Image (cartoon, rainbow over all chains, first blue to last red; front, side, top):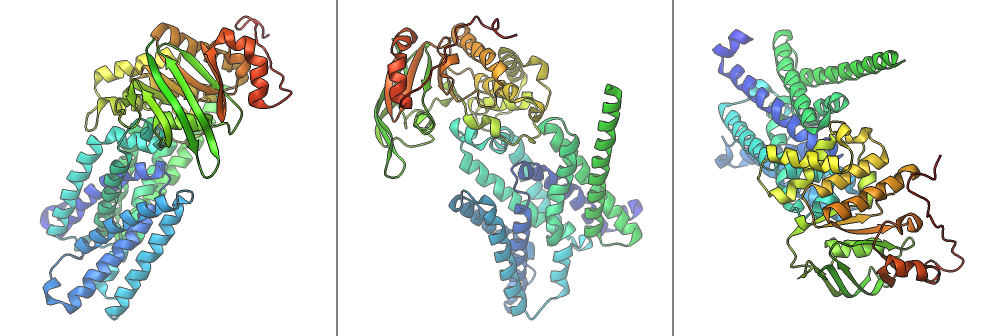
Length: 284
Length: 257
């Protein structure tokens, strides 16, 4: 694969996208998981699917749409869906998790309608469902690079506000922080990263990249910064290791990445168990 | 004397019923005021009004001489909420990180943490006696230790006024006295004005400088000497009849075996 990267553009694209997504998804995932919003990624990825289906449908009927990356409309839908979730969360302030199944089923419903209007599944759509890293184009790569720069800059600049909002929302509000606007910026970043990650692991598996590395990291990290560090480390190992294994063993990259991150998670849980046992034995 | 908080004829209703009626209160600089009252007496509502978490409906509240609503200097006020001990205990953050988050507003948006901020955080952690735990995850600490961390978080921005909503909920009995001593120390040595809502009427009366009793109306407001005299009659008004008050006049720490 290493030689291939220098030879083939599609491998370069896949590899570079993988590095960026392996970084971005766990980075935002940490904030999502600690706020107990793990499923938000699932809801938004299904909305993204509706956007992509809409784009493919329009492509079929309007020749002006051909050549426009379906990812763009997917992103528009994803951002729109994230705003809806926020609205619903304030409407159902005591049942905040309700927003997620509402948006998730709404996204799927809309997606299915668009697909049926286009007279069924085509291979293009299938590649969005399960990811197809080899289909990442140069423009996809550039879009994802732009998203990466924006997201990393925003997280660096708003780090302390995001931390405080995640840890203690009431205190954040009481200390006069612009909680609403910051949360708004955050949810838009999540929507963009989800749309971007879809190319690598596919809609059905996007949320795994945001949650599995974090789930492993939380078991062993001391403090929040370390949680972010380990999440990104596990994310990168999963994505790059997954791409590598998929290339050599001829497996589906999306699935391989997810299974690898579950494997890491199990290893971490096992490591922690052994460690606790050793610690206890030493203590006696 | 300059008053830090001035409350004038404040009423508040959630739906039909008034939770607060005609509350007037003035808290002088350097005071250690305890507001006591039974559950549902409107204590938390009053704090939320002061903090701007609820909007004032009738009456006026002045913070540092400025009307609530126009007040912007929130870093002058530190707040330790009742909920502080029901946070997500699995949250992966160290004591240092939690206390550092208290600087968020003071530093301002887009500003990045620097060395001098670290020194401030360490100082605040030391002030509450938690130096040895600074790199531990917050979830590994006991309720009383967590509450000290939250006070350090409030202290780190060097507030002039510290507002505490039932800070000893979740603190084990043995440590409650220590905890109040630490507060009294902050009040005397750092000159921080303290406003605290609490249930511990007995324990608190020999540590604070002023006591007010709240049950929809503010029944009493004065310094602790006056409070001792009027305590019996006032208490039965606030809590209803047949209240047995426990008095704690033992020397600190000496009474327990």
